[in-house]
Image (cartoon, rainbow, N blue to C red; front, side):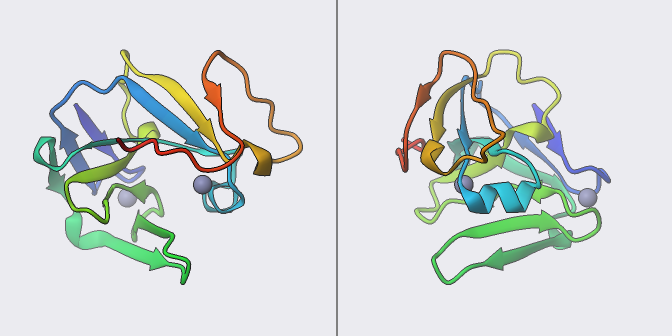
Length: 133
Ligand SMILES: [Zn+2]
Ligand SMILES: [Zn+2]
């Protein structure tokens, strides 16, 4: 399946079936997305490949280690390689066909926006939870 940014210049492919998503409600994800949370998943490095636009990707890193990559043309969040290099973090919203995927975990729920109402059956974790195993 193929994911892409808003302008379409950065595109990539994930060659594995994705079933588990997670949603992070921390204050950084709120600011970064301008919304309640960031929804993403991890896939193995072997199943991830760039299709186009890799040269347009910019990266921002905080001293804490938080890092975000984005298309320098349209600002959309793009995937980035995990620190262990064996997997990629991928933004779920870049795909139009994640039919088998479901949110399994909500993390940093203690930091959610006061107007953020979390629904559904997924587990809710007050803080960090290892969603990349
Ligand atoms: Zn773009
Ligand atoms: Zn977050």
